[in-house]
Image (cartoon, chains in turn cyan, blue):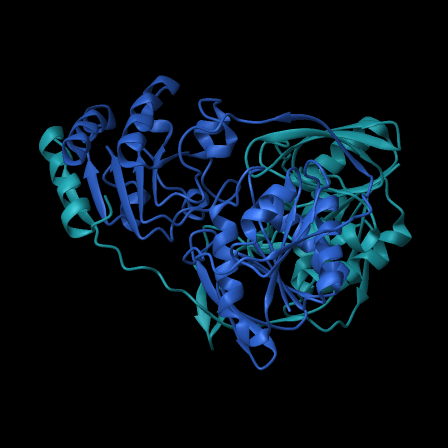
Length: 248
Length: 312
């Protein structure tokens, strides 16, 4: 069996973002393996530990992604393929490029993050599934293989969740609660430096163009009321919401 | 031609569907709109949709899978010749619209706040970077986009349309074994104009009775933080944040919520933010319009009383 994770590198949510020339400037941000992709990587490693076979990550993005790829390798992934492309590419175009590599890899299943912490996109997993002609299970919190041809999974819907049986190969996207990712160990980090990382430059044309970005923080009123007298504070708050904000 | 995929609950159109129809009407420069109702009871719901759109397709495909929805929507695209497809945004629709966009090799614009036609393209405004950045995207036709709930006025009925049955070859691959539906009480979180959220600081699942009561007095939906749903106090469907739901109500009341970045990603665009927390240094106060620094166990009962008095 072969288990594959598709990963990306994103700014840490705690990092401050800057705008430079009407686009987000990430030069000052701490870059990390996307947390939702980290769950995908952890799950792939656990599946390999349980069922044997091999594991790999595939990434599509700029040179800087290598750091996130090394993190996945240090966690325990066997090897990596990096499709190198600078700049924004929409998820449909990405899926097309990734599908080519993944089809050749012929994995048992593919895992990726439920939502990207930079582009706030949820589309890569399902678009990739469509490109491959495979089913997709999004927002997965549990997965269990039934041999190499099908799996049972629990995943979130708009409201509630459902258990499904899905034919493999399939694409799964992660949701919080799937697992607790391991930290890379020092030997793991050393080993990761020698693991195979194949780089393939690609050129693709994005169907979606990002025209401009801005940080529009709503200015907040920041009116604080002392709650020592709870009744008085509550009445004042209700009065403000009713008379000033007019929202209740 | 524009195709609106109409979200419904098996009986009636949901508010998101009426918002999506408004989006289609805003784009009339790109042509007339048709609708499609997919799923159980599609025929009956399509009759209702006929009050809004001249042509409505009905695809009776049974219960939800992303594959079925994408296939049915694609059948409607081919039948209508639509170059623009609109759906209301949610976890499920953002899954199947990605499949659909790939089938059409279309530009996909996710969770848009505003959309307009510009020289044969669609220009959309949306949030990115965990809801912190506002961006404008442009895609040439064909385009598939999802409309963020609560961003557009609901469409009004106009005229009476024709319902046409659509036959769809059903894809296999996913078999639903069991649906763990959470009983829905009160107002839907993403459609609510007011949200009352409880955090770990409430101390116990029992303390949520107060959150529910305040929500019910205000006609608000109940929300919860990740810590609360992880502790099993509340269902995951109530979670607001990066891995839960993103809400943008008129007023968001956060009770004993510290306000981690991951939580803020789900609510920082609310019109008014209210926080009650005993820690004056809690990050939630930095983004709050109104705040009470105090013990939630004392302030919440007082708030319920004051709100009841107002509503009487």
